[in-house]
Length: 155
Image (cartoon, rainbow, N blue to C red; front, side):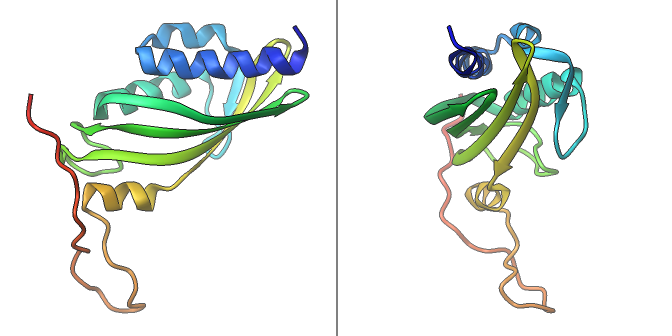
């Protein structure tokens, strides 16, 4: 298996571990000095952030929409979805269903993933939770946007 194919497989396995909730498997995919760019944190922080995300969203999933790789760099476009049942981004549970696209960029080294960078649309996520303030009027505070949100049935 070429290096490029190997790193693509690691990213897909990481997504599968997220979906299955098998967070302990993540250690198999990351270098000991793994860096989550933008937060400069190691593999333990990355695992704890994934655990927090799975606690905040029932049925949390990363559905792969596209995957490209060149050398040791792998880019995955995915759809994050779930039902908001725990605090996230300082927002109390809303029981709203969310579905937002994200782009994750991984760089591999020595057969494992060494760095991660994520491009997320948190404003769209907040819109779907029904809590994003309307910021269209610069310098003025307006009430929260009223947007139709889908609320999951209580289980």
